[in-house]
Length: 326
Image 1 (cartoon, rainbow, N blue to C red):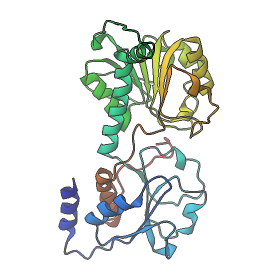
Image 2: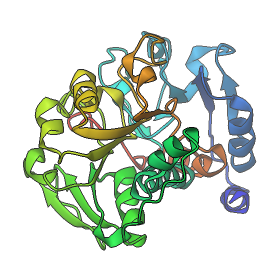
Image 3: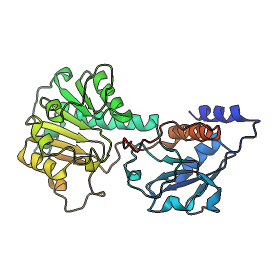
Image 4: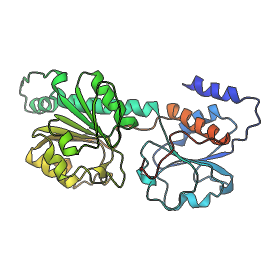
């Protein structure tokens, strides 16, 4: 991968291309690896890390994750904003965004991490691992006859870059995979419906995986009606955004046993408050929003490509559509 980045640099050698300055901002990501891999590809780039901004007028590109309100207002000469991740919901309500292209990252490393997380969560239920975990705590030798994977119906809601990859990976393991999306999609081995009511889509699922982006249209979409429409004893996995789910409705479904268990990586409030009922529920597995993260060594290629595109007067790849919310 690094060879590819250096190849891109070598191809540009000998040109008089002016690259300019990139500013990095994140409270969660270390800039060191990003600086290394991006500078390997674009040694002529001036890479700055907030708060060492220097002259704000120098900044042509911003690579950022959840900057504070008003952050973008200081930069008058921006040409490109790159969101440091695939989810752009944190950008949608901002009032300080400049009138320049805004791109999200498309990162093969991020896709692989998401696939690994969802495969783990689905297989944990498919192979009855929670029951064996409980049996172990009770020192009980418990046998549950395995179910053939092709008889287990797994539904994936949201078939974008990450959701589509998840659905394809589940199909390759021989699960009976169904996919739902608001727009038409085609994925080998996946039975896809679009526009159908979710209550109809979920009616016979064994395991349901939420991969929807957070938009005004999806906020609270997975509500009491959604969970009531799932078959009794089904399992739910949220590897998307917390606010897509009505947590009170999910909590009620878990308490009643209608939803037998949930694996949750995202929550309406993060970190999850210590007094949240999810912490006390044996049928809930909690992870701290780490199903997928951006991997600098692979994502940097995308950043470099978009910087070069902007400098050639082209539009970036993976441009955010604020009308669609992603």
